[in-house]
Length: 449
Image (cartoon, rainbow, N blue to C red; front, side, top):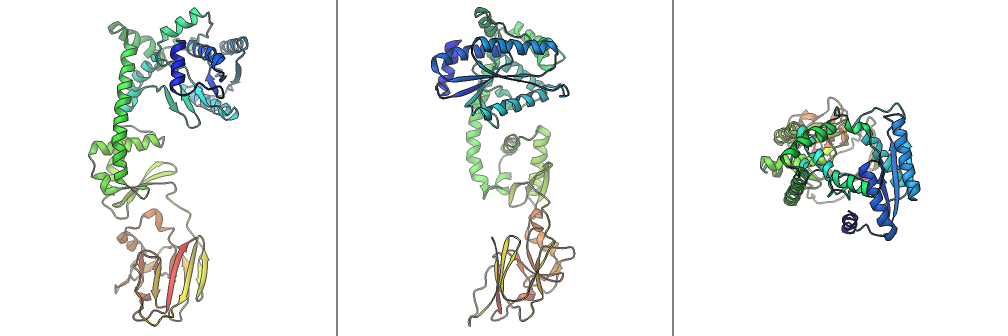
């Protein structure tokens, strides 16, 4: 086992005397075996080990004895150890326990400027994990099981015992006269994982005693196939990405299977809860919303929305940005600062009719005459506009819909207005009221700071 773990460390470039590693140390068979092996290797290779023991405080005196055993082992072997005890009021669930362990690890990882975290998952843990996921419902990604190297949000995680079974671990501890903790709760089959371990796996071993190896092989195949899919999808993603968003038409042109996989990857990458119903909901939302120029939004979390329109698909962090209530009077030529924009009014002094900019530009040649009773503001209820080239007026909301202006952007657009009538929507539309029939009287422009 020692040689296999050393090969693991060499494979991941961890055999360096400058490195500091944390070791999750419950004191049970798996973690005591791992710490003992790593300690023996570190004495020759020179890297530093720091053991971390979190007392969940679930089992009273038994938990205290386990902590004392961890302290005794580390003291005898001159291994640095940090311990903490969770308060009594903490909810006693596996999910909360896992979250508290990660908080504990994160604190010391930053404090000690560590280079990695070792966890003592084994081949047998992998079997339990995959069977548990199968019982709950999983995709191919779930069959990948526990990876020998992965990443938490704050550190790299290494699992050097993944090639060993629980039987290998017990044998090592016995031969080396280690005295691990024996958590009594590990035998309580009211917990799903214990039931799988003591009931399901034991039955499966009557069919195939090497079930751990079979499941591990399945994991490795799933990982390989996921890598192939990832490589293929990276090509597709490059093709459908556009200015930091996804091109809607190119997305829906993909097969349904590819769309489903892209949606699933998006949910996983953003740490969002998912199941087959959620993936299908987003698929239907995108394919329906891709028919509309102005698009629609779908809530993903309390502060994240998915936006999809005929043009693009993207996420929005704030669907209801703070509306600008103030307004600024425009009294004549000059430069005006309004929020994060600079608005300019300049007298046109040319003698030739200029080449008029496109309506999508943030600049326009207009006829203002001597009437400067104008304001800069954002939209308000009842706004109307007479679009360039039209005889009648329409509601500003209808203009936004016709021009495909996304809903979440409408309250942020700064408008040039006269009362309730909008004269210019920069980058979208100029009012017929500002038409310069021959020479314009003024040039107006706006740009962000």
